[in-house]
Image (cartoon, rainbow, N blue to C red; front, side):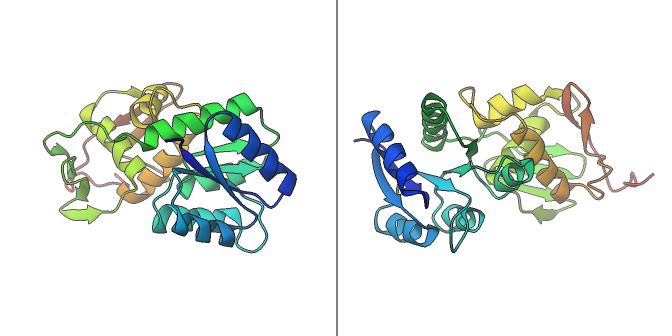
Length: 237
């Protein structure tokens, strides 16, 4: 069956054009002019992927992103005509799978759509293994849990996968491009800065002082290294 895409954009011409082009490339589409209408459509018939414009009337695209991700668990590509990096980074921090700026090339859009669909249809966590202890951090792939000094830490799936890859290579530098391939897949066609964005979120949760990380070290121009930090070693010494 054709993969079902939900297109949400308040520009009627953009909706019709994008819907036509996607259907010409083998997809089935549903369109909506607002986030509210899109939410209703997704509840009636959940799509395989949501293509969501940020600049919507009423509930804006970033608010809607939370709803689609948290309530419905759907993959989302954000569209924006605002090129400010803040919009793009904020969208990624809220859980967008990818983003595209307008105007966009159809071939590029199709590549993004196909890549996100491939990632969402296969498990995107690294293979399960025994729990890993890195200092006072314990990463359990089977339970998909992380604890620090026996206290559970809530991570997003991407944050967990990044931490697991680093833990599997503890003490060694892992290049940013290798993290991108391991967590987002070799077919990922979005911006490489997605690693930086999610790494920042991960540090906010596992570091005592995220502005001066002691667990995940940045090796400038190379990548990241996870090192043990135990309660006996003061975080600010």
